[in-house]
Image (cartoon, rainbow, N blue to C red; front, side, top):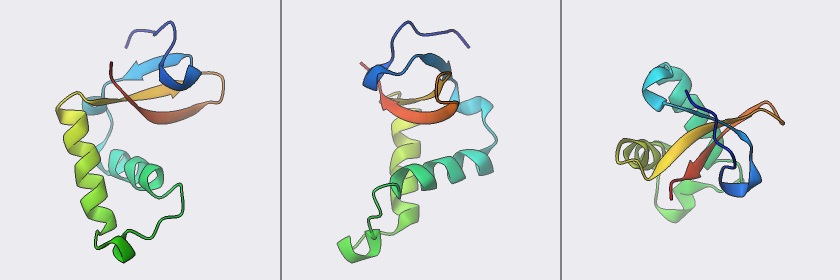
Length: 81
């Protein structure tokens, strides 16, 4: 785990390899992330689990990463450059 100077969205923190996060914890983190805006994915013809799988695939393909923001003491998913 190496500290990033500045991460997307102005966060200052550390990238956390998703492989080091317990899979149940990671899934709960993703569920919280994709439901933040209050969207009801079923209305759009998409299930919450579908969105979770999409984020997992983005993590696997290194399109997004998990960052722990030291200032807010929160974890977030951010796009990779």
